[in-house]
Length: 386
Ligand SMILES: Nc1nc2c(ncn2[C@@H]2O[C@H](COP(=O)(O)OP(=O)(O)OP(=O)(O)O)[C@@H](O)[C@H]2O)c(=O)[nH]1
Ligand SMILES: [Mg+2]
Image 1: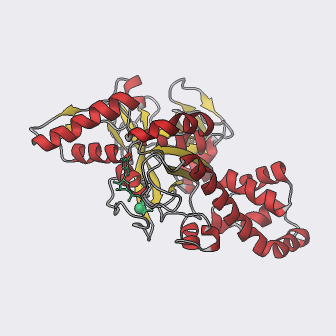
Image 2: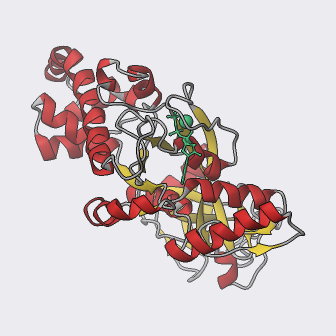
Image 3: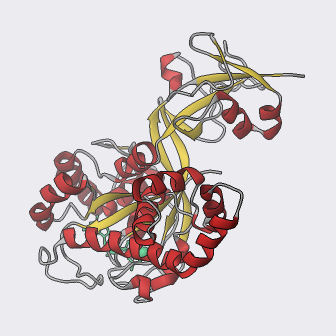
């Protein structure tokens, strides 16, 4: 199953703007809290250097896009309602919001780094609300959500763990499958915390819903007051989601040529004065100052650093790097680091997995055993029995 990245944060911080920029899906955006109520689901892209350049080939992607050697690989994203302090007890959109997050594998926390919205998302004097407080409250709310969920059933769960002949991770994984939690994450959390319910719930939240911080609205000068601390203490990525949205929409209309994540764009068509002014403003004040809008950087970090995924290219012909129709480097798979050659075969197709004999590394032409751990950018031919 593919991974799902959730976009979270207090109301009015720019979640839907970030989500829209990332997916170009239409999500409602407005300058007041609780604009989003129902979650929006869409497809964003991680950006990597495509292997086609290395082989001097033109590729024919089937499930992704390649633009001049930059491969954009789809990843599912989710935009949810804003979260306010006390959400785990039902405040604001409360539990509804938390329920929507069950299936998320990693979270991008959109923080208003300019301090122009209070803890409940209402507008305030820019620079007056400290966004560091938001970083802490969100983590605490998510932890409390997990603590409450586990506490509710803890006696029942512990009893089942005791009485079952299966190992505790298995029983817990079955019980918690609705939260998108794996056995591995449970085992890791048990090791870190033991089974005292609160400690375990916190560890489990951290391992199953890891968070990265997006310091949004970094285009506003008041953000300067908070950016250093957000970057140093919380590894936050300075971002301007609404600049990214403007650039991607302009690129979609063919007004500019823009590769997400880069520090510049080219004007491709005659623009009106107001379009030109808006785009030049972004070029001078955001791209030149921050180096990029930060949106692509957040997505890549969530997928590669936090979810620990790597990119692999299964092919049928290890010399031509093609599938059976002659498409060059047609497929990309995002898999967890540590995935083996046989596991990849199963991901391609159950039957391919069942008939797996060995794999071949297309670069070295070396034969790889079933338990070979895939490396990032591996191009793999899978040999099957007939
Ligand atoms: N200056 C600036 N404003 C932004 C940025 N991103 C979003 N905004 C503005 O912030 C306001 C809220 O944006 P939304 O995307 O609707 O925020 P949200 O977090 O989805 O809000 P809810 O759905 O109400 O929880 C809008 O007025 C956006 O235009 C940014 O990077 N810079
Ligand atoms: Mg929204």
